[in-house]
Amino acid sequence: MTDRVTPVRRALLSVYDKDGIVDLARSLHELGVELLSTGGTARLLEEAGIPLRRVAEETGFPEMLDGRVKTLHPRIHAGILAIRGNPKHEEDLASQGVRPIDLVVVNLYPFEKTARMEGIGIQEIVEMIDIGGPTMVRAAAKNFRDVGVVVDPRDYGRVADELRDRGGLSDETRFLLARKAFQHTASYDTAIFSFLNQLTPDGARRVDQSPFPQEVVLELQKIQDLRYGENPHQRAAFYGELQGNEPTLARAVQLQGKELSFNNLLDLDGALAAVSSLGEHGCVVVKHGNPCGAGVGASPAEAFEKAREGDPVSAFGGIVAFNTPIDADAAELLRGMFLEAVIAPSVGDEAREILARKKKLRVLALGGDPRAARRPGLDVRRVSGGYLLQEWDTDDDLADAKVVTERAPSDEEWAALRFGWTMVRHVRSNAIVFSLADRLVGVGAGQMSRVDSVKIAAMKAGERSKGAAMASDAFFPFPDGVEEAAKAGVTAVIQPGGSIRDEEVIAAANRLGLAMVFTGRRHFRH
Image (cartoon, rainbow, N blue to C red; front, side, top):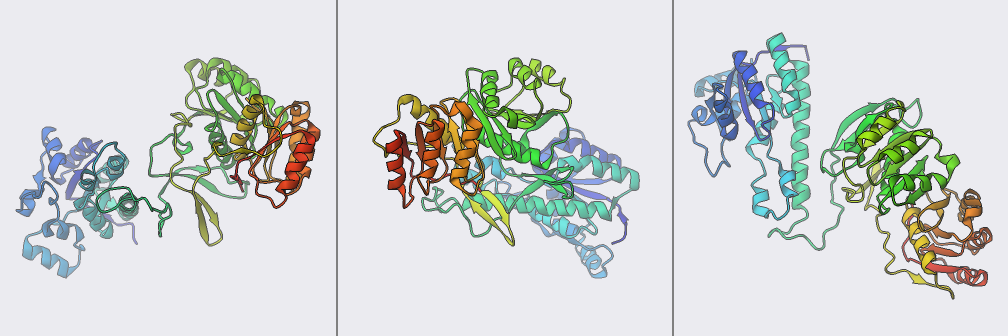
């Protein structure tokens, strides 16, 4: 395709999001472009004193059916779809008195936003299914060799500047806008499908609904290019989901520091997931994908101190996440050690001034409480030739846990078991954590043998393992894991159970005087 520039003589403007439309319309008018418009867009432009022609005047047909039919007319779509320079198309236009439309500026009713509103009925949501808008967008995008289509207000300035500087839109610009337009309508239709797929015809929620539809569309938008991937020879980028507005890593704002890396983002995500499991005030330190420390306290500073003490050596160069805002006291502690990145719901003004002294430290504001955010959608992982989808592992409930040893845990041991069980699902399997009621004291992660994970957790904990609890993400296949824990000073154990040697493991716990709890639920994290 040559770098051809096509003039824009007529433009149709019909948008739900009115941001920037008046300025764009004024620029088009000043460039001599005739404007067509309809509905609320037309009223807004007329109030701004911008001359235009109503679509109803163009078609000779009034808007009807409460606005359901406005632009669905051959005089509109023939003007958009006609191929310039095609003799038959030009003859058809001339015979019907239709004039070409060179630019279509349309964005769609906010279906997804409406569907998420509390107390709204299905009929109101159905009325947010835009028909005329997507039809015009697709028509203009199909005819991108001759017609420009703009669905994103952020492109208004670029379009106006190019029309002013070049007298029209280039092939490259029209093609770019067309791709974006098809993405816009694909995302819109996916949102409608996803919503309707949850309902019965009368609008009730389907009770038997599987969370896994037959077809899945991943809707992603690039947030930024990254310096490289896990290693310098791998190129990488960060993409965010188009749907949802909850506080997530993709919507966090970087307040300062070096550019985020691929590995930073993986660790930040793991840290956020872990800290969202803790009570107020909670802090987690992550290193290479695993929590190496976690704590709760009366303040963010106290929580950080406990998390750092979980493994001070590994915490060096780690990623830190808080579930409450960072204050000045916490900022002073953070400033006192080398860290790669810090994320929290927000950062106080005084804390920002303190952290600003560490210019390379990446500091991110999540914009909300991670404990209140529901992880949207499904957990998606790529394998060769396909994807694996699963529900998120978010269940720490111990309501069905049962004591299987002769000795039941004390109240203090129960508190330590709960903390350990909350954190073990965030550690790579085979996962073992040693914990007290308010902190981790040792972590054994990612070993091929569970007993080796116990030995590593004991080594990390040292003397702090005396009187600690141990949590295991899966059952112990042999008594040796429990025996190693008791040797280190652990007094209580929580695990799923389910091994063919459970009776041997329980017998070992009884012999060693340990309390043991079975949860009946596994927490593998591969």
